[in-house]
Structure formats: structure tokens, C-alpha cells
Length: 231
Image (cartoon, rainbow, N blue to C red):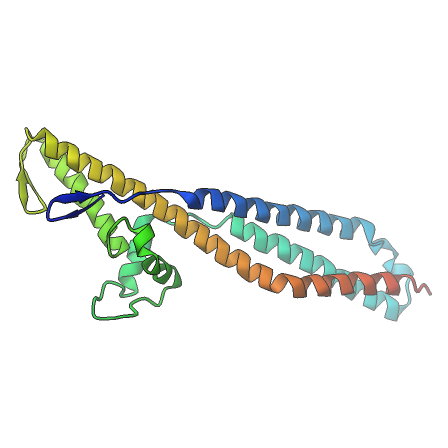
């Protein structure tokens, strides 16, 4: 719900990012399980204990190939785990980043050097519940919270240029609804940003993955060939 001159406007707040993030995390968990199983199989199944029986040249080649294969498996495990451990940002943290990056300057057509803030502002219509910036959204919650607190204390408040008294139950209810919708919008924003950040990391990982997988397979093949050459 957003306000313009005291008139309310419903802005639908949904959380599709929750489902998308669940699917993404399932994919990453599969990668973690696959990488862990691969690393275990490499350590237990590539006959690393036979390296001392190989010629010096074959032994060195086998050791290097095994190290490369295991390192790649552990790298995939680490990168996937980092995606799962990525913290969920709060709306306040996003707002602080927005302020520090200069995104509140109305005269700057490209205000933010921060990729996350720029992404949020590019999707403001669906993410910010009618507000222009994340800071505006957080301010709307703060204003509503302060107004309700003062009303509960028996003090009259000014709500969008209109005086609201403690016995004005209609407008008090209206302010409560604004607060509820704003908090829901902030939660949806946090979900969306978290999903976006995880998706960005997964995309970068998947960009490198084909090359890493090729090197991994090559290393396993080299190890198998070199370890077959006994002294």
C-alpha cells in the first residue's frame, strides 16, 4: 500500500522468490552432494597408495593429475557451499548500501555503482511497493511505526499532511494496514535480493563449470594412464 496525499493505493505483494530460491538451493545442494561424492571416490578409488610403486616420471604425473582432480572437486564443493551460506540481506542493509552508493541523487540518471542496488532500482515497480527507492520504503515503515506509537500514547499525529487523533479509529486502522503492507513488501524485497545474489553466484559457477569439468576428466584419464605404467 502506498500513499499519495493521504489516498491509499493497494500494491500487490507476493513472494515468488521464495519458491525460486528453494529450487536454486536444491540445485546447489545436488552440486554439493555430487562434489563430495566425487572427492570421496577420488581419494578412495584412484589407487593413490600405488604411487610409491611407480617410476619417478609416472609417479609425478599421477600425483599431479590426482591433485588437480581432487582440487577441482573440492573447489566445486567450496563454491557451492558458499552459495548455500550466502546471508539473506535485510532491507535496512540494502538501504544503507543504496545511500552509500549515492543512489538517492535524483539528478544522476545512473545513480548506483552497486550491482544489487542497481538491480533493485531497475525492478522498482515490482519490488518497492510503489516507492522510488529502498530507503523510501524503509522510511515509510518508520513513519507508520512512529505514528502508531504516538497514537497509542494518546498523542495526535500528522499523517501525510492530515492530523489524526487517537480516537480516529478509521485512520488508525489505515495506518496499521500501511505498516503491514510495507513490512510484507520489505520481506518480499529481501527474498528477491537474496535469490538474485544466489542466482548471480550460481551463474558464475556454471560459466566456469564446463571448463573445470573438462580439466577434471582429463586429469582422471591422465592419472589412470600414468598409474598403469609401473616400474
